[in-house]
Image (cartoon, rainbow, N blue to C red):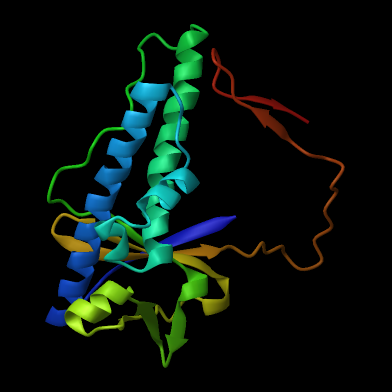
Amino acid sequence: MFGCQQVLIKADKNTSAIIEYLCHESNNLYNCCVYYGRQIWFKTGKIVTGFDLTKQMKSNPHFQAGYASSMQQTCLNVGESFRSFKQLLRKYIKGELNQKPNTPKYRKSGGLFTVTYPKKWLKLRDGKIRFPLGNRVKVWFGLTEFFLDFPINLKWELIKEIRIVPRNGYFYAEFVYQKMLEFPENQVLDFSKVLGIDHGLNNWLTCEL
């Protein structure tokens, strides 16, 4: 199980400018991925995957504008959107949907989109998280990293990824972490008694012991 804690980012002017730049480039990359995926679909009838998009976008200037592993997450997000489109299309063909689904749409030009960093590329230093930047940023701006505070109520070893999310003129850091299952002391569990839950088309949930 995973949890997510959202924290409003309170950064200095320079760090805020870096974050805005990354989210802007992530938005542009998202639209490039959507364009490529739509063209492949319209011309060949094939659905692209996030890994297809990553391979195709490696030479894209917007991909190169950020840290590679972070920009790959944007490609994977678009790939997941096309995967959902494929699943809905199958349901439509089977008559399980009344309205034919549309291919993933473009985001607003000039907008901002989420930037995601897998934990393996991050480091914790004296209560602050180091976020690496791409080589192109280093060449253009002479910067290799930026830092954000780590919440004192979370455990670093449980963090899985950190997302920087633009919303309503502000930026938020979303800390995705693994939840530890806790049981009361001396609690005896009978694992032979399991509740099966199945969601159906005509009913919400069917439960069976």
